[in-house]
Length: 370
Image 1 (cartoon, rainbow, N blue to C red):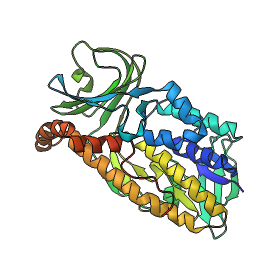
Image 2 (cartoon, rainbow, N blue to C red):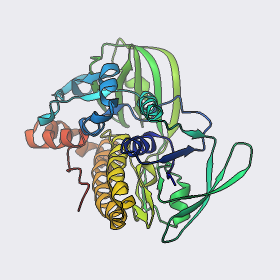
Image 3 (spheres, helix red, strand yellow):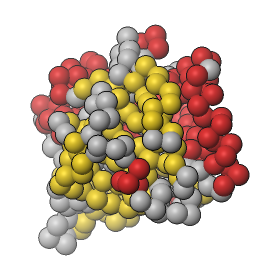
Image 4 (cartoon, rainbow, N blue to C red):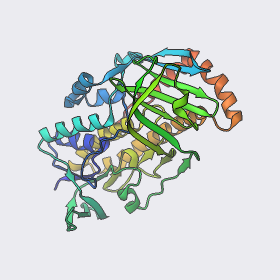
């Protein structure tokens, strides 16, 4: 019986690829009929590059993306602090700008080379587990229901995870009240194209990063984020526009028995820090190691996965949540503190190094064993 993976985002694809490369039969399903053309994540951090090195995917990423050479903090219409980020600390690697859709495509290509394709339009409907395996119901595009067995089930099916809900696991946390706006649009701008840009604004903050060519991702929580772009900026065609709410949540456990969780099914947080997709791929790496051992008779490794990953999820979400609450600039008393504190921290070597460690995914070791 193949291991079953629910969800074909970066976490699920990475888990399937890492298992298939070990010679473990795997099946991956996704309820969407086609991959998303839009990208939530835009950065591949050094930790992810390291974890995927042996698959060949990292080489393709490096050939396609571009190195983010620095971070610029803007206040009152001018650049206030500039922090170099390339290479990132001791790794010799850079933070790589690459859309999530391209990352998913590369992972899917590598998975197909292992003889495994994503089964699309297939929705997990129900699950039950016993000592020997997991029974699931899969609803196919024609409405037919398949009942099948798997030795393990990995829930990588997103923030509204059917797998997590079927396990009855709570997803505690909090949500920021205001909507955030996002654009992928063409810009003619004086902003340095090889850097990420943060703007501290009177009613919030703005983030801008070039995706490729003159296409930029702009995101903010103020009333008119685009108006905060520097003088001389000309906004062109909008490729994608969205609005969303930011929440910080961690599942109460990272798995139960033979059913484990990874990616957004296990943790969600703001995009600040560039950790969402990267933390999910890290989950997949640890899962593949634990699953391989479990299938060879060491079933205690399944509980070990949950014990290893849950503290990491809590730590990362706590750090990213604190950074987001500081940066988002509300209420006014917090904004005043932010405007004084953030530039000073970015100039202070130890604080700057810690921020870079968070962005690089280097703020904790990747442990596959307790």
